[in-house]
Amino acid sequence: MRLYSTVLAVLCLSTTAFAGKMERDLMTKKVAPSVATAEANLKSSCGCDVKITVDETTLKSMDELRGAMRIADDVAKNVGKYCSDAASRKAVCQLKTLSLTKGKDVGFTFKDGAGVATTDGNARCGWDQIIKVLDK
Figure 1 (cartoon, helix red, strand yellow):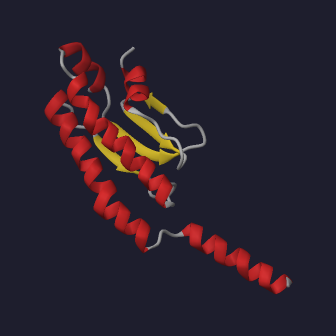
Figure 2 (cartoon, rainbow, N blue to C red):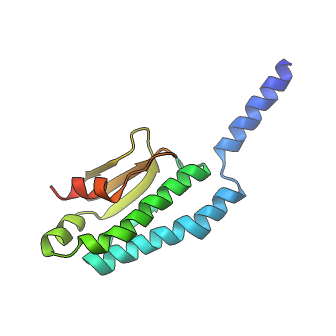
Figure 3 (tube, rainbow, N blue to C red):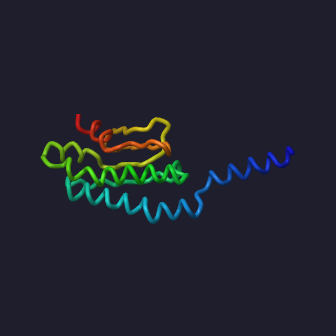
């Protein structure tokens, strides 16, 4: 019984430590295109060159990756409506990089041009949280 428990524990650790085919496919086919669209919409709507990255060292599960994708989708969907005047464009263009990552506290932080938007696999940061911090 003890050997079985040890083997089971090792198998559980190994499956969470590395992304499998489904996670890689999700990243390639859905997450990466969502990030590219968000970057393009930030550029076309606000005139900002924001580099968005997905922290694959923390985002391992399908739910966590979907959370990152939804953050990028939310940015892509809402940035065009938001950047309708010079002050709004200036607020958004403070952002030089945006990292999508896993976090215990879901939200958005910003310092020195770098933004971090988090998901925990269930909840995720949204556009409203991002803009609330940037547009102060």
